[in-house]
Length: 477
Ligand code: SAJ
Image 1 (spheres, helix red, strand yellow):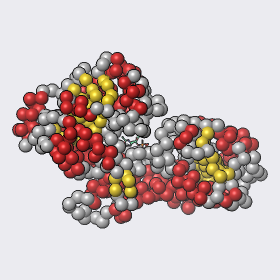
Image 2: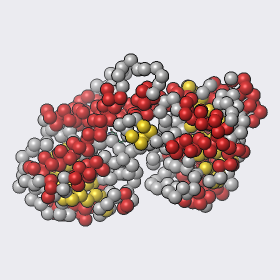
Image 3: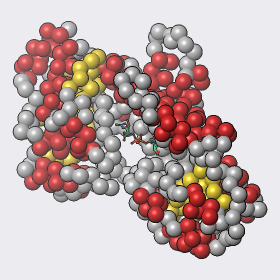
């Protein structure tokens, strides 16, 4: 297999032209990084002219950045790539025929988590376009986070059926998962080690040739395509698991009546090789588009493999249990808020609740799968009126969202902090109480970012994740 491919790649020569399929938060920075490298002559960015994303084509071709939020270096890279005529965006996928390498950066959300059903339709459409137009000796590198087994299975099958060629013989195929974080896209692409896994040695080496010029600090780590898929999904499943362990510890500390953050510091004092514990931070829940889905890709990979796993999977998976604990935290925030309202003599049907933080991460406008959403739903279903504050998220992200905190907390019975935005670290207890206009307003801290004593001394009923030492404090008048 390798010889025929080696011959096809030798005939094509070094990779000089690249195509990136999917102009999203991964595709755009990687496309302009390829374009900024002297190793490559030209980069096409492929974007379907869909109602929701087609606008990006014209913006990018005018050197404008369609992504929101602060992305250091990206605006300049886009302008320079377009000005140097090294990058253009198009919906004309036939341009693929002229390219030496294609990367596919199309998101793979889960359509149904219960049945472990991912929504691969957008990815299938992208791969079909690639297979239809690509030529012999091309490298296809799948960057999307996928269920382990997808590259050598679904992706290979679609590319072979639509191209009439054989993967590993006529074209190279690899998985090179993205490891970027919003807010640090360029830096992550240049500095993180790059996992590169081909369906065979020649594919792996060809993919290494593609990504090596992008790296300033990171190294290329070579493995098989399926090992690369497991690495990516597992690195996020482990992070989710670590967060869930911290969340479960917080729930125990509340029940026992101690401060989980004191316990966390105590554990962290055990340092040194091999004995350090990685206790992450408990909180109001886990949001975003990585940790909320990658666990299910990993578990599905084992569940759909032809080999059965010795330990029973899905519901009994430790990783799935971790997902359930993390997804319980917004419900726990609801319980803490209802308990706090009870201490203030209120019932949830009649109250106004202010949610502070709609973005899933601090100081970000990224509002994908925010933990505050299930909390808001529970409150609305219970008859409460909910208003939301966030200084970064677009106003149309959810109804009753405002960036004016006085407007949001005014005349509210309770205030629940969901995101650790810096703005919330300096909340003035007396000023907030004046705005809320209650003798004993309720504050529920989901990110441990306010000082409980300042609010308790001001007459608040305080509840906090993991704050078993404070959650039953005497109410002060
Ligand atoms: N969270 C906690 N406790 C923690 C850390 C995070 O509750 O100790 C919550 C956050 O509030 C957020 C969610 O988890 O709601 C996810 O936070 P995150 O920091 O993991 O941010 P993500 O979802 O953007 O994760 C990405 C992942 N990167 C990639 O997929 C390439 C993840 O692997 C990175 O570790 C993470 O960024 C990072 O370190 O920033």
